[in-house]
Length: 87
Image (cartoon, rainbow, N blue to C red; front, top):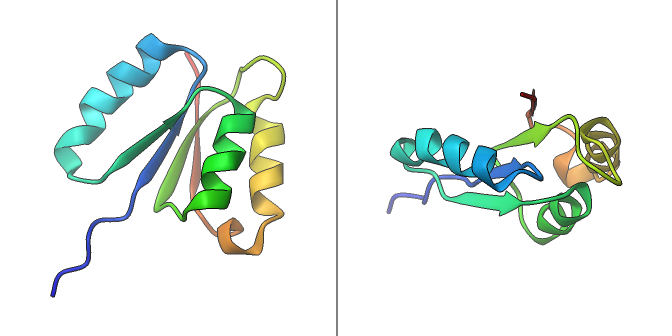
């Protein structure tokens, strides 16, 4: 029995940037979960585990650094790789 590939969390407030990144990531075969804010990303992280999180640095309300710090406070995601992205 093969395990399904681990999901990637893509966090960016800009829908066009999420679409562009998603088009690059889809051929990898991993499920992609999208979040449009830091708060939405935190909700996603509470609901499931991710192989990697691609996180925009500049977002309104809660920036990527604050979001990453909160993600790291949860023991289940403290070692999840976070890659910061910005335009």
